[in-house]
Image (cartoon, rainbow, N blue to C red; front, top):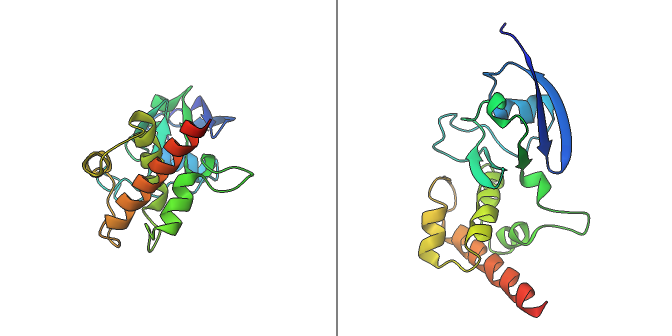
Length: 163
């Protein structure tokens, strides 16, 4: 067992101090030490995107980030998107547009889509497809995922225009 270090993470607005080996992967810290199980362990090679989280304003695949690299980071997972008032608009649109089947990829898909819409609030369908290319789904064929993201963007933009 290697030398452990104290790591501070702000996950979904809550500060956590954990003791971990620097080589421990962020996904394992989130799931096993903090009990945040929304991000899934998929391929562990960064290909599938099931572990996608938002770290310091960027989408990252938590299976390829060492917890030592995340020290001091602000991290948002799927659990941090909804609120006491209900689901985030992306969560609702994935449900309404049948953007999920088995659900394994869904947390990573929605977390990535959230960052995509922050970076580009009015994407074209092509931009959504390109922006989501690092997240794989074996069930849906992607069409309904794209529809859900486009619908969420439209609702978010309409709400912003009304304010």
